[in-house]
Image 1 (cartoon, rainbow, N blue to C red):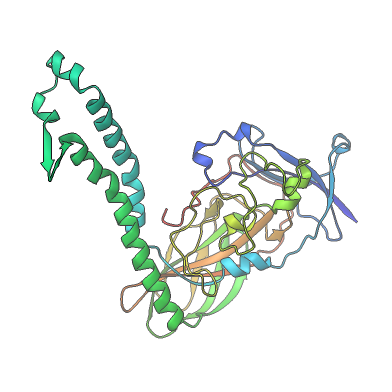
Image 2 (tube, rainbow, N blue to C red):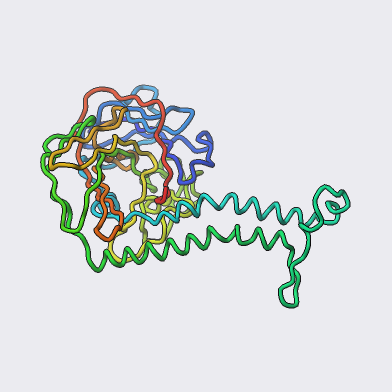
Length: 357
């Protein structure tokens, strides 16, 4: 039996608005029947942290968990990060960027309308701004009529983008693509050599890169380690448990808060690729021949290994488009060989969990 220590403070879905110090640092002793990797630490105790190291005498009081350690890609990652994916409509990102300005404009308009008598008396603001506009039997404040359309434009853009996404997903479901034929001759944490690559008819490849990330910790193990129950109050940074029908990696373990993907079609597997919240990647490489070399991230990352608390996941991502212009991504998990040296990365590379980002 092998024993090691795992220390995790994983960023929640809405990590931009979360203070890492307000999220509990989960520390456990892991017992497994397979050898653990070389020590690594990504991040630090004052921020987000992913650490896997050997056990010391100071760790005697930590709770003990007994879970599987494997080098084979976990089933939920094979469901959600393997095969062809459709790029969300660009209108999603535009709509999200307009939400904050729209809300600000509407709030200002409402405040000016509420303070209208006092502002008119001061003479600082022209009176015509408060002129009502007549529509039928009612009068409407001019400022509200200007501000409200600005407020609802992002909503309308989001609806249009979802309609376009659903149409493209249904088209793919009715006419799915075959996977590219790829032969990987060498793969390490600093480079992946592809000796042969070919694509199905109708697909025009553009570029490729290597990505590495850390999957969301398993919910029940995380809760047990901090003394919470499944149906009790969730820990800070976690949502309540979601129904059995789950569609995304954030929803998989109930750590997603709010919207994580544009509207998916719930037939078969998910066709919209959700970013991993902890992820690093190498540079894009143009696909101009059957043989290409993909460089790894600048930082040296741990090799492939999966457990309930920490799962280091590597993959190759290829960007392409169909003849009709539909932008596509193809993702394939890869197994990076075990490394013997200790790895230290000062900051956790945290990404947005939103697909359109």
